[in-house]
Length: 335
Image (cartoon, rainbow, N blue to C red; front, top):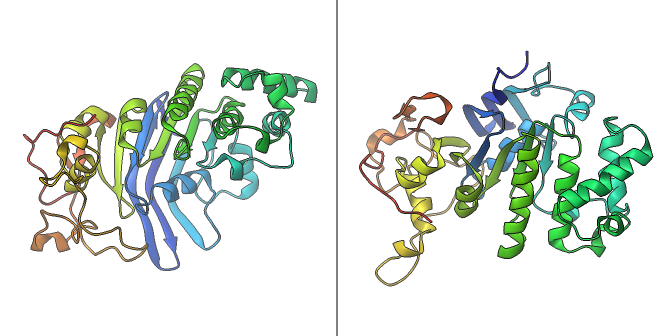
């Protein structure tokens, strides 16, 4: 059984555990064909663990349960063996990592690394065809003089060029889903905008969906159509970017937006912050995981909140998990 028609990815009851501790508890979400879905939250919220569980790349000692279904793949990704996953990764789903120097092999020429993924999945025929396709992919991601860049080693390219190489590798076999984990964090603003344009246009040309993980709300507003807000390994709010960013219902979402809005500073001119810090993994409170930092917390928050849907029109509906949400009439200006 693959993902349902229209969905590239379907995640259900995903749990990531370290020994007896739940680090991620996700009831479920989907990514539609060609959709761009953002996953946001502070560092330590469980975003990257969720992505690594989808990719089958969890570190030793971490275990995943539940169900992850991908279009075009007959078996569930959770519990699949490494040989099965090696046929899926780079072909049906590809990942763009945060730091290209750790994603690229420093001892291989750039063109050979782009060609290698096509040869491994036998999508371009001969080695010569794969190398020619690699140069063309470097051209598609707007690397100057792609033929010369193909002969270079990673350290001979700039940070922005290296990240474009990683994107070229991810796009090489026309995957149906790209998982992007903070792919522009280490880049300056100008280069970041260029790389985002390459990523979005490359995915759109292939009708590939994007699962975009970041803490940068401005990037989500630029790139994504729908957004999931994560805290303590749980999705606490979900909806269209426009609705969540202008009418947040969860206090955590509202706090993130206020902290990123230069016009929402305090009386002494300081940026607003969310009280406290993100607890260490496994140390989030019982009940509502945000209650020890939440300005709206009350006694009933010791019980985990259910999911409230405010506009139940399919996957684009707006929902949240909170006993004492931000009033529906509240408006937040962002961007």
